[in-house]
Length: 311
Ligand SMILES: NC(=O)c1ccc[n+]([C@@H]2O[C@H](COP(=O)([O-])OP(=O)(O)OC[C@H]3O[C@@H](n4cnc5c(N)ncnc54)[C@H](OP(=O)(O)O)[C@@H]3O)[C@@H](O)[C@H]2O)c1
Image 1 (cartoon, rainbow, N blue to C red):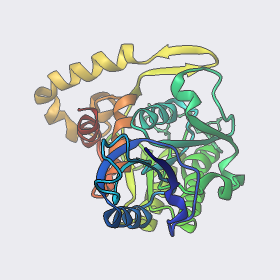
Image 2: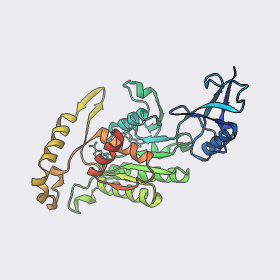
Image 3: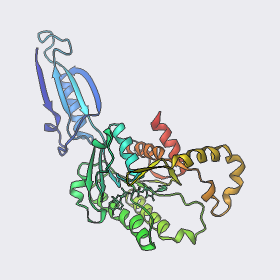
Image 4: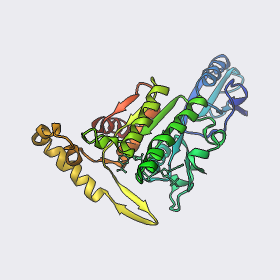
């Protein structure tokens, strides 16, 4: 009976970042194929892989086939950085990512949120302002950056947080060689162009062009309208789903009648279907995992992408 334990990081050419288990592969093959597995792992974006070799577990007697081992590889393939992971949408993304076995780091000025939950303990919470972030500490080993940075305020504040903050983040991610950037942007509500010149929308579109120009083949821009769910504010929970969910159902049920109104300026302020915060989060998970998922995504496409991950 014999039990061995190796770390594939020792064989890997990739930098050895910290890494825990998600995907579990169980394979039974000779040493030569084991070498092939190690090569394969070291060429993907994996960092540390544990391989346990156990003749006894495999039910194989050493003297029958000494070259055969039972390999259990604990493999984590994704590590995402959520900018604003403590916020309403960001926390849903962190939770969904954890539930799918994705390693998550959040960056926000407030850091770890005050509420608790098993998923909360599985996120690495970093405190910092995106304008002064120590990206070396935040982005190391990341495969995707997801930005939920955005908000309201004066014209100047809206330009800064919706636009400049995201431009800074996109460039940091690009310089760091992060392969994918996902931006939570916003639907344009069919607004007339003079209204789209506000700091909020100008900032959003500036951020979008930065994502799409720096990440032409992997950048993702999600454009939801009103997002509903349970928003936590100062220890209280605001049940936005009480409005959002029935409204989404109503608009879906009446869409054939309301379609002709869609061409009217600003009609989407009333007619754009709300999206659940979980749908936005699952659409992000879809984007994290699927290399063919890039470009701009409308409300309906967000829902479709979410449905594909939920099932
Ligand atoms: N909620 C909606 O209905 C809706 C609809 C369409 C689009 N969106 C877009 O979706 C995104 C997320 O919205 P949300 O409702 O989740 O907003 P939120 O709750 O205000 O979350 C924003 C997050 O960004 C962080 N943040 C703000 N400034 C920062 C900075 N300088 N450095 C680092 N972190 C910073 C905040 O944490 P700290 O304050 O602790 O830093 C917070 O975690 C926004 O871009 C928004 O425009 C939202």
